Length: 598
Ligand code: G6P
Image (tube, rainbow, N blue to C red; front, top):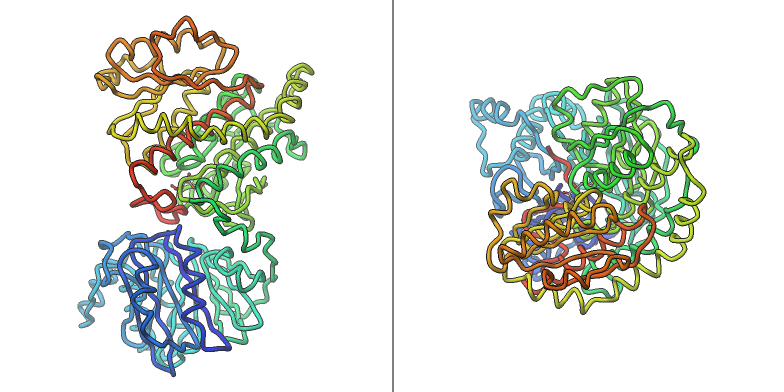
């Protein structure tokens, strides 16, 4: 969740370099930030509440010449966002920043309090710092004291650490929170992800759980869990720094929406014949957030077309229940970041229980990608906006290919289906671009939505899954409460929310469900709702004009592709509504892009 960076430089620019890298990690958390610097052998700390810009403002009048720096941008877990709770934390000889959660910190804290130690913050991270300091005072050995402390910690951590008496060295360790080492001619980094350091280097080493590292400006040493020195492969990042810029767009989210047509076009149409799907008679799709919604969309394609029983599970639930995995269960794990804690834990559980795990992941080399039996990368490029757009669509496109591959392997794929599919793939990029370019249409609808506090999304079949994603997008970035409902279920309770003017967005793109969905739309109109219908050009909307306040007509494409067009409309309605409400589009309050804690 939190972003961390450490830099040991050959020049005295560690602080400014660390802060410029930290800005690339702000999507991981922006409640507060801070940096610890080694200036002429002395450790100084600077912290600020809120975004990194506040920290920069605070230190702009200091002339900082730092050989080493560790910096942090926080998504609060223990203790409110405040300067006191902001990282770095310093106890005794030890200064550190932390990403993750030390689950047993209360017990450790009690123990340290009874030994006379004091803490100023409410964080688990300060307790971790205190415990390492305590071990260091006992042993006098830095690496051994970090290891001894880690042996006690339960939970997740990536911890860059500086000791007062060796201020130009960064020690670090990771468990269940990401950490990489970056190598450059000017110095060496530790970071929560490669993207942060791309302006300085594309050479990096992925650290595994329980590995330790000692970084100076001209040397990197890596150790295994028994503190034996090991050699690790140096990788070269393929994403470039320019992909992390807004490139003229007002927001990363908008840029990423505009990138979508190309991303899905590049994915669609591939068969994954190196996997024998005929071995499985049921699929568990496990994910969080929008990735789970991508799974919901896929469930309709997999069950209706590939005729394979598919359950879609929230990872935080899956990891704590009986999932009845059998030898013929295929587990598909979906994650843009590849680091979501609950999803990763669900993957491990499924493997432990003997399932074959296929992962669909965007970030190359991420934990989920590395631990799955097989990974299909979506190659959507870096996604910076917290609210996912192209990440989600790339997952749906990949799962569409999975469904078609299963159909092919089972002999269910008719030539006519493939013909329409391939013909439509050729058009999808242009069709999606045209939809994105209809910005005025979304602005007009946003004007009708933005003053409301409740919005309903209804649809049937695959459209009900798209509703979930549309509703989440609106909630995430505009802070309007919304609910997604299977249209047929609405009258079993939720229709009580419909009053004069309540916005109800109905999606009806499935031919054999169209009329039934329209009946549900009419029920909301009869209760005074504002009705927006999203449907396809083959439907006759003239005869229901009286029930409609607004309508968006989409091109009719293969049933495998329609939801990819629908979601663009939903994303842009959410985007334009959030703009009118003056919300922070790319960094919505309380959210983080990469959720590496439970
Ligand atoms: C966070 C993000 C969501 C994302 C979810 C799962 O909540 O804000 O956009 O869908 O995590 O993330 P993942 O990286 O596993 O796809």
